[in-house]
Amino acid sequence: MPVPVTLVGRTVRLEPLAEHHAEALAEAGAEDRSTYAFTPVPHGLEAARAYIARALADQAAGRSLPFATVGTADGRVVGSTRFLELDYWQGPLVWPPVPGVPFGDPRDAVPDAAEIGNTWLSPRAQGTGINTEAKLLMLRHAFEGWGVQRISLRADARNQRSRAAIERLGATCEGVRRAHSRGLDGVVRSTAFYSILDEEWPAVRDIIELRIAAATSPSAPDPALTQECLRHGGPLIPA
Image 1 (spheres, rainbow, N blue to C red):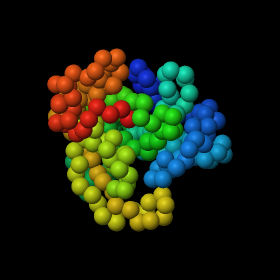
Image 2: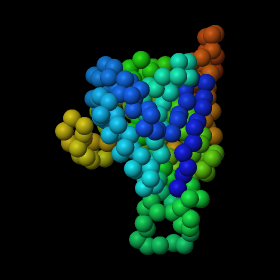
Image 3: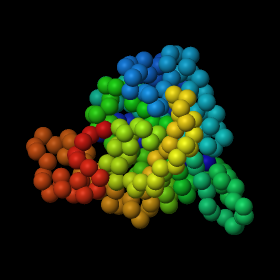
Image 4: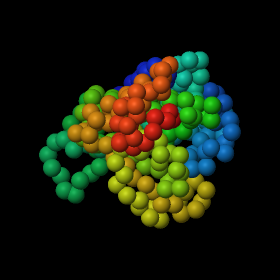
């Protein structure tokens, strides 16, 4: 199974989620909760401890790889994200397939496909570019470290903010599955599905890096870069 790893960028550090993050995670989740309408976010210290315990149980079972999202400017935890839906395609062909089960020694296995999800950020971290750089770090680790064939992302179809952020990455929308599951608010929700394939990764990586460079540059963005980003999913908006 994939081993925990720390991913470090300019504005964000993704640390393996651990019990010692509980208090800081609870503090981040206590900010304006109106932005969490579509995402499960722990409320209070006990809820944060339970959130971490469930995430670590999933990690131990080989189902996910969770992170605490930390802003590098002040070292404060600002949210969480994870790899999940890990799938393995190596070894002899078995039919019907058994998803999520690696061939050979699971300690040495890396996934061939995965999903990035369960992502949330405190309101003060939203719109700062932290989410964009965190996605870059995770996508780079998946495609260039693990060598995955595919990364999936999904969002409640009503969650326009999350959908716009995914689309700005350059992910391809595969459609909306209607009446897919029960939403956080108890309403039956439709789900928008997105993906990035390994052959698309170099172009997607370039676009994300252009966005980050333009957002952090003290000068106005190069019009050519702006047009390129518009062509691949939207304006230079940090997220």
